[in-house]
Image (cartoon, rainbow, N blue to C red; front, top):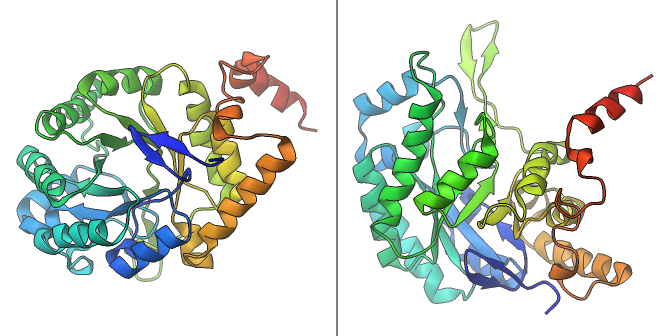
Length: 329
């Protein structure tokens, strides 16, 4: 089949995957996603805070951070905005698995080591085909070193992988000082895939009320540049599945991410804007483009624009930056 791809060892009929968002809270929506051609669905995130209501621990974590983020549909959780407990979340996985054949990937946003392990196990037992771990941690503590931050991520990955057999994807932030090396270390820790990148929701100020606001803004196509760069750099160099997310508004962004080397391309914002059936249009547009270009399968062009496959690898390096500046008049 033209659009078949593989992600974390799972065979998908399309590279277009629904990213973690509130649309997947309803099983009927997941059925509609499958009917519209989604290759897989990442469930909305289960936040440990909403389960355990550990107010003191939550405030301690939040006080050490400088920004807030979540997936394409939510800002960092006000606990009152999330009413789904672990039992209901697990039941949603079971219901989805009963009604659709496409992979269902659970999404976990934990705090404690016990939470990461316990909820991952329960997600696996409920029938999830994989887990996407969304590690909320922006180190605002000026005394914390970069190595401490890195080990925090690696320890979480190792703990989860020691306790579940299903594949685990790590949704990365774009701010590691050595993203390439960190990717290799995550692979060594047991990660099966990287999702590049988590979209950070940053606070704004209301200058009249002197309060902090967290307004939601859907992603825009121009935001693909950073994940596009890193997928193109990592393709063929790390033995991990690569998932692209952020800025996917149409098939144009899907094609660009695939050319860079992504195995799957995740989207949510465009489904809020255009509706779930828009997935059909994106898949059809991708097939039309492939036909126009003479490609029979995704493998015919996936990664063809990555650094390792282009004729001038310096296009991803400093030399190209200089060329860009020279072109500015």
